[in-house]
Image 1 (cartoon, rainbow, N blue to C red):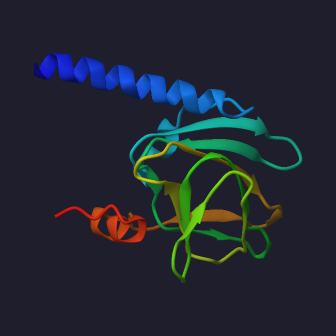
Image 2: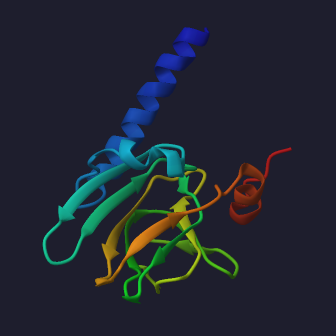
Length: 157
């Protein structure tokens, strides 16, 4: 029974991922292994543009989110998120906001924040690196299960 459950569970996840990818015009990309240490859950990365301005399609499996982090810059910098598929969340130093396709989030340099998928939805956004001088990311603590559950309404006992 456990083996059948595992097989059907994996197949369902593959089907959900394929359905999510069909719902948008950008590719999901490859597993985001280079940054996996800064995520809870699995994410995928598809570079769309690396010249002039970095633009990446970032896809989160249900429940996946990145750690709190800050985009630093001596001048300019920051990040813009353009939501393209699914349901996600973004939070900085105020209550989290739910994100849907078409939503845009402007994140100035120096703002501590996190973003990721809702517990029951795949989520994709375009991440646009705002040009700046002496830019870099500082990765901080994870958004733990209790905190995430309170934010998303998916609290577990």
